[in-house]
Amino acid sequence: MPKTPDALPLWPGKAPGAAGDGPEDRPRLTPYLLEGGPHACVIVCPGGGYQTRAQHERDPISLWLNSAGVASFVLDYRVKPYKHPIPLVDAQRAIRTVRARAKEWRIDPQRIGILGFSAGGHLAASAATFHDEGDATAADPIERQSCRPDALIACYAVITFNAAFGHRGCQTNFLGLDPDPALLQKMSLENSVTPRNPPAFIWHTTDDPVVPVENSLIFAMALRKAGVACAVHSFPHGRHGLALAEDDHTVGAWKGLCVQWFRDIGFLKK
Image (cartoon, rainbow, N blue to C red; front, side):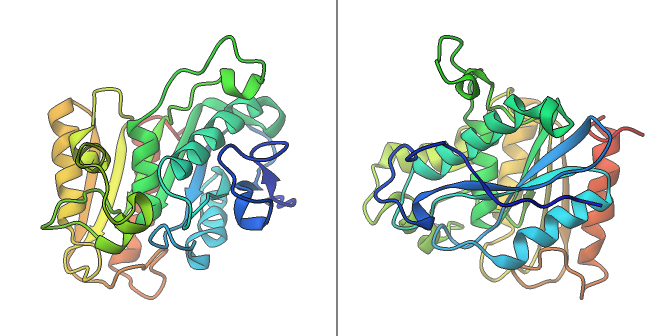
């Protein structure tokens, strides 16, 4: 059975860039750990347009991952009025934290993935695209760790901010009303993929009325061009925000497909 202690702050004191000291100024991880191990682990980033964090895309996802034998953490990253790079800094710190404390939490430090829905999918894909190997000279041992995830699961994710397929509200919350064109180009993630991106599992519904399926398709094309392995599933029908899709048998198949993909890439032991 998973253990669910209280959420853990990502920084012991005030978080970098924090505007205050309230709950929404303190990014945190809620752990769903497993006995035994070491286990693979996935950090969950709920969606919400970089304005909020959807409840149905957080703890239920970690419980499902536990049922598949994967440890998990829900990441409460900072949202509006915080803008880039603050959410990405939070996601990177989350990965470093889990890697630094992997032995304590019975986690394999080489099997740490990140999963996100909608805008949380943009954050997860950003963490999979922009990462470093840590600062070996840092006084903080967490900052010495790599923030590169070993796997990405992108669920009806926002990827691009181009005019044709971008989500304007998400863009505004994340980058502001009049972002620098170079930053807008960079954070349209199809433009920033490299061969160092981890393998990805991507799913979307073809008639998603909120985040067009083209977001997932152009990201998959960018990964393919960079030589990064990815599994891509586009289901014909389904509203935005389905999460576990428990009321949709067809779309709900993504969960089993994802677990099999975990096995295929060696993330989950056969």
